Length: 251
Ligand code: ADP
Ligand code: MG
Ligand code: MG
Image (cartoon, rainbow, N blue to C red; front, top):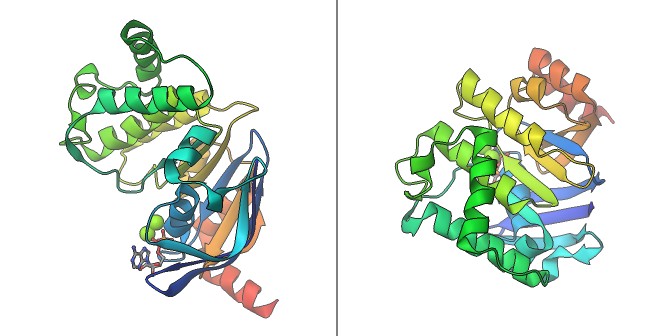
């Protein structure tokens, strides 16, 4: 589904990603962990195609298509979804209106008919239940005045409506209390399927108690320096990152 080879990327002429390799197969969940400032969000933003992020070497293939050739909205239409670490507030833009426009743009690009208001609301009600999202949030401006937990649940709700092939969730667990964390994890688990892959960027092992990853990677100083299974996440929780860095330096 996703094949990243020797990816180098810059922000403001500074090298941030320094040779990332990552292969993700359909249905897999990959957790990316690592110290602050190691480039995790940069990787997510490069995948989403945000401005300010320049790929300087390497390649990213998404279902065989070269992502670098695609605008952010083309990536979304191809089935990529990015939940931002800090979800933006968009005053004046209705949450549900934006979602409907996004969904119908994606459907159109696939040659499918737009959903009408009734069909769309049926889908929305069904998917809201996954994350126990309060109905009045639907008609507020996007993320405006949402609590941290509501923003994160709104992201998972958006993912559930858009049904991407590959979802990238950047620190979806940050700022969540235990109950909200469980709700978000249940929403993510409900969206697991053999056709859908996910990248979970997370600082803490606790999210991975609820969402079992197939692979865990440590990103440090712009490179994946160690990969393993969920056991690696537990080891990181106990021992921190320093030993992994030393191991990588020794090798
Ligand atoms: P992580 O998500 O792993 O904590 P980031 O990818 O956010 O790390 O940041 C990696 C490095 O890139 C940091 O040193 C950060 O300051 C820098 N960086 C990220 N985004 C920008 C930006 N838009 N402008 C300048 N520097 C940035
Ligand atoms: Mg950070
Ligand atoms: Mg980050």
